[in-house]
Picture: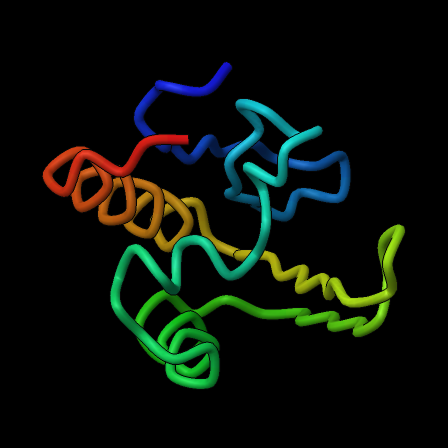
Length: 103
C-alpha cells in the first residue's frame, strides 16, 4: 500500500475510551507510535508531553524491546473525551496532508 498519504483513524473501544492511530498498512509499521512525532518534528519526549498536555491523552502504556528484532517499542494511549481525540486526529491528518507524508 506504499504511496498513500499517512492518515490517522479514530474509534471508540467497548470501554468508551477513544483511540487514534494509523491502520492503513499495519504489516509495514504504519501504526508505529513515533511516526506522528516525526511528522510534527518533535522529539519522542516532547511528543508524549504534547499528547498529555495539549490533547489530554491518558492511560499511557509503554513497552520497549518488543517486535521480531527486539529493537521496537510500543506506546499506547487513550482519550477520555472524543473532542480531544478528534482534535489530535484532525491536526495530524492536516499536517500529514500538507507535508505530503507518504507511507
